[in-house]
Length: 60
Length: 388
Image 1 (cartoon, each protein chain N blue to C red):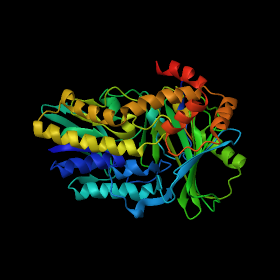
Image 2: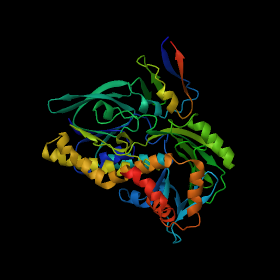
Image 3: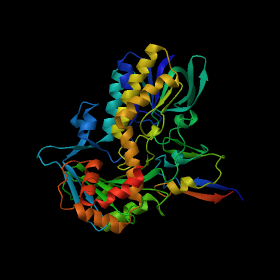
Image 4: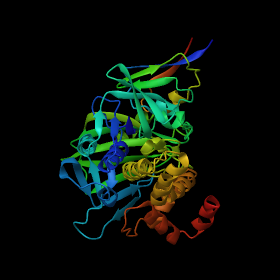
């Protein structure tokens, strides 16, 4: 199964740390709204870098 | 057609736009957020000297003035760095929400167009410059420009699209969380730094006074060393140190701790501030270098327009300027950061104890390292390995 990053919007503080470390530009911060697109390959670097633990990897 | 499009209205971008507009250039400054300066992603500290080099000080955006810093080792050994002379404040804690707007306003006053809620999506090269693709209030919009200045922060896409910078790795970025707390009982003449691998793996915690018993209480950790998110360490720090106060604001952010990049330019493009990883690898401070970089990028933009030469080889003048201003400090502090990252908590404790009684009269990384070397000559050998 393919893994993908998902954001918990109730935790996200929209700081852009995850955008800074994404190698494949699979995310974008639009004002306060973090968008993760289908290019995400589930590498998990953004999960590691998120200051508030708002990101996690899910199957599929 | 614009002479310069500046992406990002933080200190670097606004300073670049202002400097270029003052020299008669046709400047567009775009900011992706609808409000400049908020949410803040910053601890807001800056030395007085580095601020007054580029901006006329205005009390409106000074939240607090400090005379020095107190640094705490893991065992709470205190090292004080302070100006001897009373009334000689050396540092400011800014109100970035007001400061950033002020800078954008003086850029506008100098003649720059300022568009908010406008995101740069990318660019393509044309015969005589660049076509920048923007999304303004949800509508796609394209502008032609001779030069593009990327001041689009740690998440810069311009730098990566232009092939100037590589994406940061988890060992090259500090992950930060901060509360603005009110009702804090501290001596507001100082900033406070707390070190320790357990407390803040690969980073440090801070308390920066913001006046009227309020303070920024924050932490930065290196994701390659931290097992938990920054906010976890922040909450634990507050509990451990026993900081009493009410949380009235919460922000998060990320700071590049990369060191010096080899170049911040490509044909038609210059990067400044966090987008060029200009923040200090030891302190994480970024405002001073951002202002300097923005100013120098604005100058070189004006020279390039005058010379009608937008090539990378011409724009390398900008590299020369920012590097001679703070490039060496970035290089040296990156080495020092790598050195300090290797020290365990008991070594940090004994180093702090060795200089705890000393008076360090200057608030800088150099001053503290000089004092450490004076007291611990064996460090010279260790440091030499890092600097050769």
